[in-house]
Length: 306
Image (tube, rainbow, N blue to C red):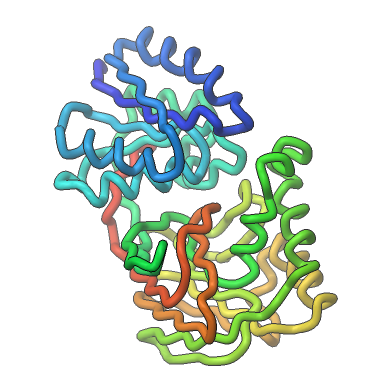
């Protein structure tokens, strides 16, 4: 099947390897009969602008994010903010974690190429996120999870250098223990349609998919992007030793059964903190609280192999 495909490439993904790998990706797509246009991002937020403009123009059957989870999140957010939010999107895994690609069944390059050339769109739930960025209101989207608390510190300290040295299987563990050294609980009020909570928290996390961190962490066990709900995980603050043990449980998905954890489904989540706290989406820290997380059932059309 001949398709008009736009590749939106983050050339810095995977420590610059994505910029080299894209030539083979483009060649294989063209050999399969696709008409390919390549556009590179110039910095943070640029993929959102490129995707929104392309969706508005209606020139392509497929807009493909070529990079990691940050690139995928930006491209999908751009499409959803456009005049054509039903524009099909594909994920080509050229990043470190590639969590959203795995959810779509395109976690390998071969699977991603099959999806772009002949895959079918399937609707996926999204998390609409309203928060504050640069002292201005921001509305964007997450697709795997949205979080406040230690997760933001882990993301910030899992630097490109850490990713390059330790690789996708260990980098987030290294980032976690770096974050643990400066761990401070977040005093917050959390309002949901399933009840309200208040206290000091290690983690406030709205999950749309089960895994994160290169699929190493079972962050939201049982979460599904097809059930029209968010899996909210609230972990109350505790000692650093207990936090370290919670990380081990997080890898196994047993953290949600801990005595200091609450885990339930909801559709709307409002997070208000005593002082502004970072909001983390799918591997990116994008703004500050107060924040609102809302499920948007079936909002995204993501191309899969199914």
